[in-house]
Length: 296
Image 1 (tube, rainbow, N blue to C red):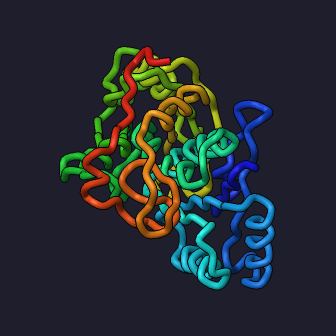
Image 2 (cartoon, one colour; image 1 turned 120 degrees about the vertical axis):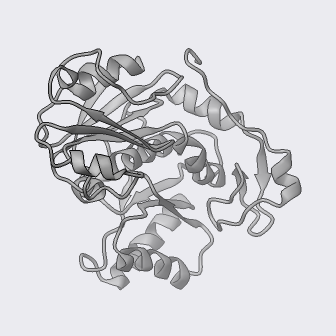
């Protein structure tokens, strides 16, 4: 039985990559569903699947996050993992799909939950913005803030795995390859692009070739993206590992441990279900998965 994956927004559920990839359940906000109904739905999921991994962005309203913790507390269950991710919306959607792919593999629920922290390091998430005046996700200099007011100035921003910001002129830089680019992954990826209201070919014409992606797909822009990035005039993108066999090998290559608190199997340095860290002795012997360009 696959581990159930749940999300707090419907636009975090991307189309499956193959017929075997399951969908994700929707955990609605308090103003959209009474608590009693939410408890019933979660109990049904736990009875059907055994374990539920709920993924939600760090930017969701406090009331929605509190609802998730109330559900877990009232059901008195240790089979519900709450994963709070500080990634942009499109990056979270990509990670959710990867967890959906892994949920039908022969990994335990604890490994699936703790794999989110590992896989997030292999997602290159960013955006092309017309302004950084309201951007608080990466350090922005006063000079960049001032240039935001200049007509035709755009900014390429990377927030994961490391923050980066570059200025892009509205001339040739935006229309063809050869302009400035952000530092990209050193392993094979595909690029998902969330088309916003910004008219530019920089992401597909300059960034994608520079990053040597094997394919480019377009997706609807998540509803929360303009708020997350501080502007509605933007194009969001995320480079990711598309091949389930590579994801499987990456997760399987990491040493598995038992959580000393709840007994759940895990990889990495923290339990996905109770958030308890490994003891120093366990953490010192942990193996780390690494990918390079050309890895299969």
